[in-house]
Length: 353
Ligand SMILES: [Zn+2]
Image (cartoon, rainbow, N blue to C red; front, side):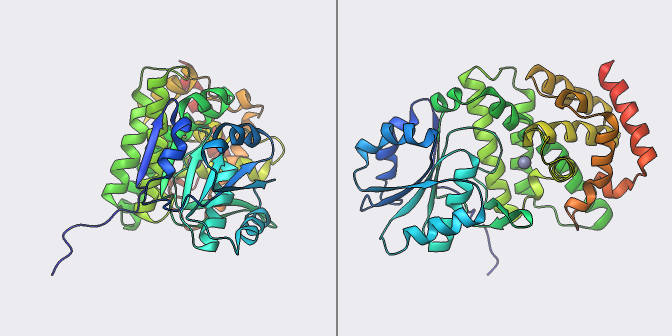
């Protein structure tokens, strides 16, 4: 019998709203998540303590684990510390680093992961990927996607605005990543998962076209939902393809070439995406990207994050090496240093007019 449908790996609970954290105990009491109330919370030493004070009184069956950094060592230590205790689930309560550490540790001890995100910096919140620092720099580890996803907009608004800006750049870059995926399909015959592409593209477009700004709840809701949908799109495709193309290769190149000076993930991805759209000849789209990024206070040229045009050109030149095997507009055009320099000059002229 043919398979008539497919099951999508996705959270059983997605709760995005102002005040969601006040109801965390109720959400976690969901029988599908925790029947005994025994939960292991992973939090940071700093801002995590304040959140703990807020939610701990209603969660008497919880144990609390402090995570000091986003390394694989911390993730392994968390898993080791939890061993021997019976829990229904692990709860990652914090920013991307805490959630990534909790994701990896939960996978290691075979428990489901509840992600409670305190900022909207990137689309890794709900993805099946844990990004951790290791001895070789940084690694991406495949993990199950979260069983529940909670985002309290009141908490998100308290985080520095640059976190929200970063999430905007990451969400918008989906559109460029999908264009790369479709290019690879045309040139290389790579399979495109239509459902993953639909979700990731819709997520990107909803942020790109939303008239609101970082200060209003309606916009923050759309942004949070876009980041969650991007993560589920990655679960569907089984890799980061729906949300990561030339835009992300350029961002990774910034991280690797200029580790001390790199800007935020979303700032670099947004800039990379605008430039990638220009490279593929979609000048009108590149102009729209630049206009929206500017409106939200994101950079559209490298000097706005402290890099010279030449440093940017070097990052673009190096970018394909950051993701061997991934085919994007950069691998397709295979530009020389001088050609990238000319393309950048053309881009800078186009978006300033
Ligand atoms: Zn990203």
